Length: 314
Ligand code: 13P
Ligand code: SF4
Image (cartoon, rainbow, N blue to C red; front, side, top):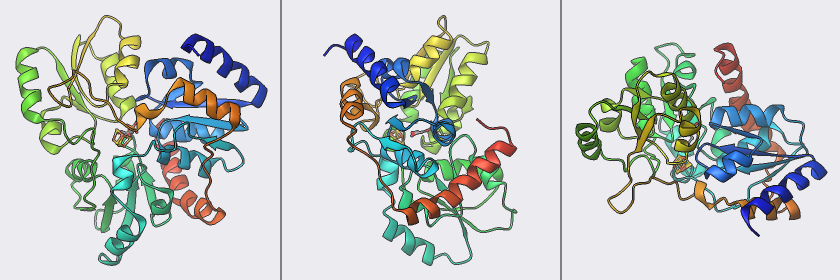
């Protein structure tokens, strides 16, 4: 089926089944344009919490769909490809993380939302890259904290807040491979360009950046800046909204290697229009969580949403 027909059929199914499509900024542009809502991890969780749809089709990755399920257990949450995981979530198996916590008694546990629901059940509070500073600062300076699974984000937040959180050694395979040397070359070739970077990038990359933030933070920065040219150190999908919001500005993605001028998350890009249609039609690929996991993971997720509301972070 061609894409135009798929979009039409998905719209018909959505109406018939009272379904919505939530999509992350790293989805392909056709999916972003068809979705009911496109956003970063925090905004997607906020949307999942407030929707009264009977079905949520999550155009994103597994941990995002799990979070949506915990926040809205009465909705059926469908992930169009169940293989759409995340290297960060996979870097922190629940049993190993539990051992890590046991080695550090007396610590509060902050987990980046990019982790499994099982890991969230062992957590005091969840954060995203939009609210990590405010979440960390909700604890006294003296409080000992474990942060996982992303060591790059944890290291960046340590520097910003002057904390010394103990970091789990996980990385995002898409951001961590971006090279500072390559970016220096790009800056020399584009001296007027500002560098924007996601905090999952390595410290050497973040030190070069003019702005570091979540996907929505980066997007807002490029839209509101007077600058015309940007070097973008994150996943290529974000370029779609950047170009839509600022059609006259120039965006150059930091490539993941010499063979392409792109940087794609292999998990995010497993989602296709055809798979969205198929799972909505057949109501397959449902995300299920036990009641125990839902109730335990909701505690740290809700604390995060509460602090985000307090600071008006959306
Ligand atoms: P954001 O919360 O910034 O959208 O990040 C999600 C993600 O997976 C980044 O790799
Ligand atoms: Fe996970 Fe990285 Fe892909 Fe985000 S970009 S979903 S952190 S692997």
